[in-house]
Image (cartoon, rainbow, N blue to C red; front, top):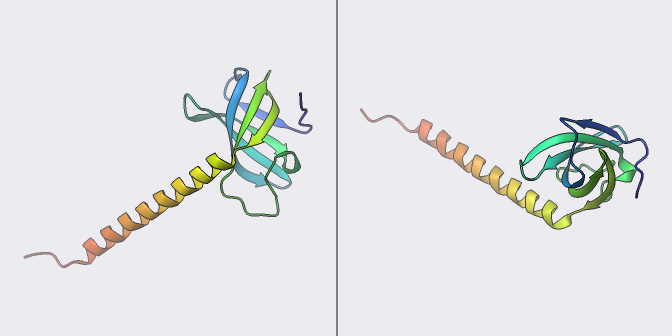
Length: 119
């Protein structure tokens, strides 16, 4: 069992023991904030704030947009964390595709509003 010294937890309600998806949210000074996601509900159920050095594949000196981990929660505390490179890449690709669709849709609407109206 791994101990994450200095970890802070905020739960909507006490989580069941088991594996959860952890999504990197942001850095706060030298700490990493991770959202704990209930995969069945597809919704965050809490936050974990860890010293950034405790989180694999995160470097506080790099600007990170997306990183996905799997973590094991036992008795309301994180006991294990692992980086998921494949899921991280999938989420990055999905976000880029969504951004392209939004930009294309926005450009189409701008082009339509620039057309003169038929009289």
